[in-house]
Image (tube, rainbow, N blue to C red; front, side, top):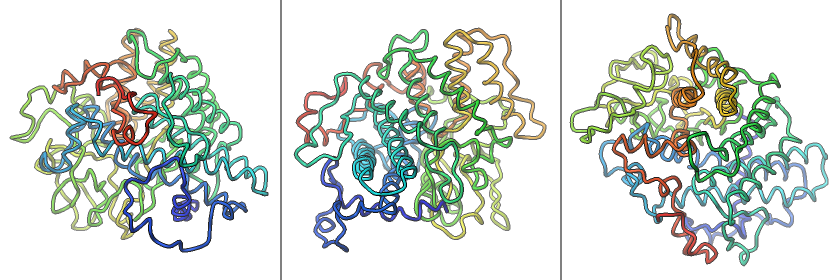
Length: 535
């Protein structure tokens, strides 16, 4: 267990101190009516270094909630066409089908969950940034705590902007009469606020931590997220516009990713599947991850001791998973996928058959799942709606140590991601030969991950336009089921072409962004009349 996570129970304190900036619409009245268990208030809590650290740890806590344990695979993978809603039938969690089929409406509860939990993270970061500066404590530790809080605020806002475009900017702890904040006129204002937080964070955060602080936001994490923010604002050649675009910032992406590469603090692990094990988490390839703790968070496993993700584990008596987010492949069980287009552009065939990442990422009929002893299973195509399941986050039963939830972290930024951003930006700047080197690093590691693998081979003699397509394809393979696909399609103007070919009725100019939650518009007069286009 990461030491700083032991204090996350104090998030209840931070949550209880909320007076503005978040509406607790999901809370029951009896919870709100309970008498306080102590006399702690915002006035007497923020008085020591221990209080500052407790408040900061509480600001990390929303990362473990639904936004990255549930929304990533729904909005990234299902909406992006790599997976189906999954489960046994259309009635189980049918709301997801709205997003899969692009029939979503602003009143969908999923949207309000995503919005409110992200803004709760913003609120907690704002509390740290407002209250900690007045605490008499070690200046270096104080600066680091404030840097971490700015990184977290930037991460929460990035999640919001990626989903909704322009969103209300709240950078202080608001009183109840101040919480009705309008969206900015231009998305550039959102990006500027996020960039400033990340630049400030990078100035004070260390490259590495030791001991119980491993897993906190680092200088590398701040620079990497800043590079990602710059990439999202840039428009690749051949793309007329995106909902994120401001001005091309490819040189900034190259500079930032180049600094990360030159730091020597990160590397590609030689063993690809090792990235998704307890031994491989917080490795030099993981630049920033949501820290999972067995029994409390992580990927929300609770499947009778067998560590496939509770959401995405096969729905069988052996695994007792819920069977959501099932990969789409060329073969589907009888009765599923009546639309013949469903198999077009499928994730399974995006891999070369000899690419080890295919085997390490997707379970298919005939695969052996070995948990030791008598717990050895052969995957059956009736175990999911599509005949496939996600393999990437499977860990041996023994490593659960009797816990309900998987202790695996949720990777948000990997070094492989940074190398591919670096290559993408170089290619857009016309430096295609340089870009090839970094794409081939990813492909070489993939090939070396399995003894005897014959691919993927190095890319050679490709044009700028060809490499542009190949980089997005390489991202799909390398980062499969890590929640990136839909947003990669949108930011590169590929969503309509790719998803329409699959029979999913994506409408350009409408479905690039999600609708602002109707409940938020109803309660906030400043948002009325400012819904995203088409909703």
